[in-house]
View 1 (tube, rainbow, N blue to C red):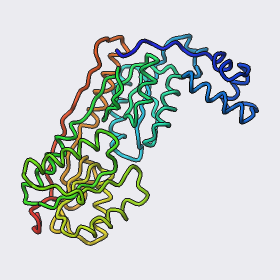
View 2: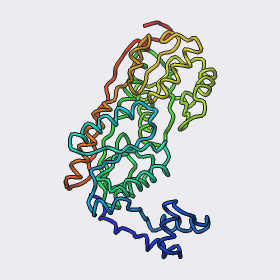
View 3: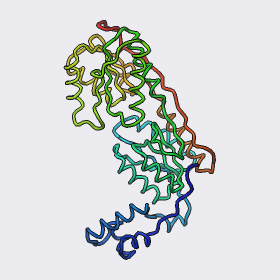
View 4: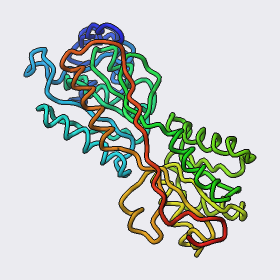
Length: 341
């Protein structure tokens, strides 16, 4: 699977590249003891060029992989990742492995730092929801089994477990169109990853299939980690007063939309129908309940862990992608325009 294992770069090679002694290079990279900033910068640059990964566990592991498995997620505040981690941990624990969790905050550099840390631990394998290609490629080049979860980076040599986001989004928007809505907004917070792009594709595909014209003005992209999503959503809804329904691309966006409609005193669904891609507990507890696209998140984590365990056990063969299907769950937050459910 993927490329052959890369020869491990030694600390001595980094020191030679940086023009310093191995002991100085070690202190610069570990942050222990004094090293002039200029030398520290030079050593770090040399390590990056050579692809050096510190082997913190070599003395105790004696060249063997550990029983640790890494999991990299993008936002621990999002309950989606808690359910994903639960599915991963259940399968790993049953196989005698321990999960180590890293939150990269949606930043490629932090994901790469996490990958380097897992290599240093000699992790048996890594699961990650990629924000870019670098972390996946580094792990694959070092011969570490990798399974990408929820989205794909485009890197070669790793398995993946994803959700059919386009189909789920199309089902949600088709439901609104069938109810008679023609001014349907979509609110999302990223189009960088394939999850956001595919949900936008599904939104557009539903309109095309129904013969309803699309308007770019009805799509609000908040961007990753918006400073004040409530203010952006408020301004958006104020600028488009004829919107009769909103499709929220994930649970974080759905919560922000719901809160803004409550703040405005806009009854759901009489003034505005709402559908969420994601189905969390609070969506079943509010009144009316939120119509949602339910993802098999726990199952996705479990399936990804099983794929990884098979690779750790030595299974060979081409990289595989498992695509799971979401479920559309209608509740009281959607009705015909201008009518309560």
